Image (tube, rainbow, N blue to C red; front, top):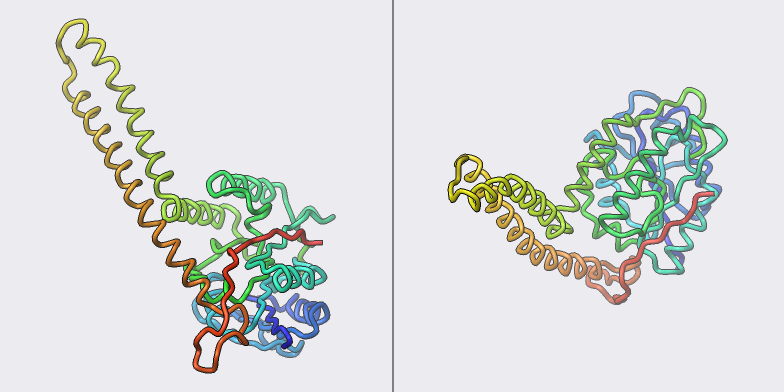
Length: 314
């Protein structure tokens, strides 16, 4: 059976670029259906996308995360390719990304961005932020990506239908060839960067609770010991505790440190259970629509571990 491919393009005021983006992906993936989700655009984005041959739909809740959640829920396909409507991702890379999902059984392929000749498309501030966040995530969760903020991705059906997509805005990822003249970036480097960092810490708390609360416990215990050391020396020399409030503070900090450590141990067990449930939910989704019976039960499942791979965007 032929593989059904859906190209997903979330858009907000991209009338300058959207028509060429739609045509570019139609040329790169002639058998794919190109969907443009208009997120309350005030210009001619929807009309120009439709004229270029895209299926245009609308998402009234503002924010890219809301659009992605709607696209994943509504669209049925075997392989999904997501990009932006601003023309900053090269459609020529799409066939290779789709091939990796189709032939290698990979659940998510990330098109890693490379600097183009136009410095404005990939300025120093954003490059530094991207490297910093990528290194930070690699340190916390393991090095599986070289560009965590790329919006150019290919997904398996299993990933799309089991991914909760809870983020409302750019923290789901952030947006390279240069934007065409007249096309304006929707990114706000500092604001969106802060939201991404916040999301990373929330993910760390949810997915690595022992590490998160263990670090808090270590800090609290270290502060308690530092403050208590002079009191201990004085007590050993004189048998007196001259600063009772400091002693009480040290005791409270150490109690909080042990409480935080206990929370980390308990939540780590909970997190392991949640990962098992998510794994089962992932495997319950058929890899293709042909693997499900008309009644919706699964006819075939594979037991391969979900994998992710980075593909460098040419």
